[in-house]
Each structure stands twice: as C-alpha cells, then as structure tokens.
Image (cartoon, rainbow, N blue to C red; front, side, top):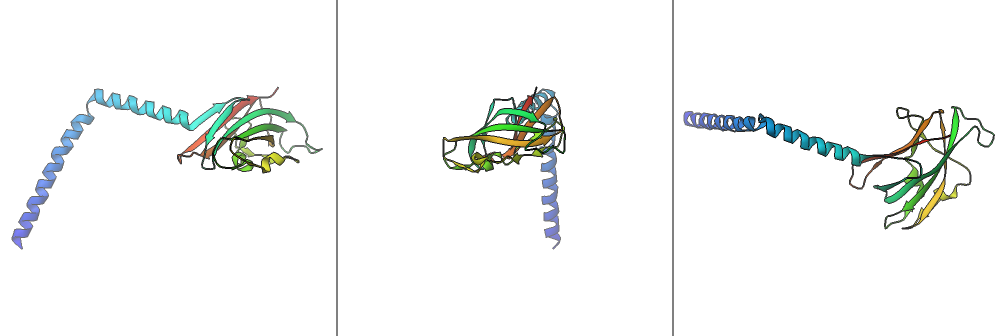
Length: 189
C-alpha cells in the first residue's frame, strides 16, 4: 500500500513539474510584444470583416442579396412616402409611411413572398424601437409563392414618428446559421 502511495506521489510530482515547465514556455511566447501586437492586428481585421459581413446599410433603390434559412432572395426598397391618413384613418403616431418593396427569388426552391418580408421593421431613427408593417388592402403580391427567378412587388405600411431620416431593416438567420442584418436609410421630402 505504501508503495502505491509513493508511486502515485511521484507521478503527481512529475505531472506538476511538466505542467510548470510547459507553462513557462507559453508565458514567454505570450509576453513577446511583437507577436502580441501582430495577433491583435490580425484579430481586429478579422473582427471588422465579420462585422461588415454581418450588417449592411443601403439606400433607397438599392438591393440586398440575402441568403437565409428561408431561401435566397433579393430585396429592394423601391419607394417610400409619408401620408397623413390612410382610408380616412389618422395615425396614432405622427405619420404613416407607405413603402414599396420588390422581392426576387434567387434560390432554386419556391419562396413565399410573405416569409421574405416577415422580419421587416421600420424605425424613426437609429435608436428607435422597430415597428412592424401593416398590410394594405389588395396586396395580393405578398400572398404569392415565387418560383426561382420570379419577382413580386407590393406596398407595406408603417406607422411612425415623423423624422428627417427613416430606417427600414431586418435581422435574419443566414444560410450559414449566423445572425445578420440589413438596413435601408432614407429621407422623405
């Protein structure tokens, strides 16, 4: 029994010595200022690339090419205008903003148009809470299923606080299973 304890004690001491020796080697490499600054620069470049890939800001008339878990499609903000009332109804906030969108199915599978625009929100400013869209009457395009290569366009209504710059955007799960976002920034005159 005593021999076993001595043997285990010896193995434990040897393991601790090996760990201590290998820790010193890693510590020397980590304390090398040149290597540390190079790693930091490389990490910063990678992080900025990932950020730019994860978030895209566009303007009126520009198209986002989206590869999502729903399918691949292009989404374009074609037009937007403020309206004081819709069908005799006044907004509860400052204004209604009617937006026109185009969806093009770029995948090889059919795509439900409503699914493609389901995550769209609009903001009265970059720090505003997003507001979901309201479907206007007679908007059959949003109920369609697009075959590969087909396009559909239609209007979505948002109720917002009036501002100089509006933002429309969405967060989505990319085909690579990462969370990405796209934002359109525009002014209405």
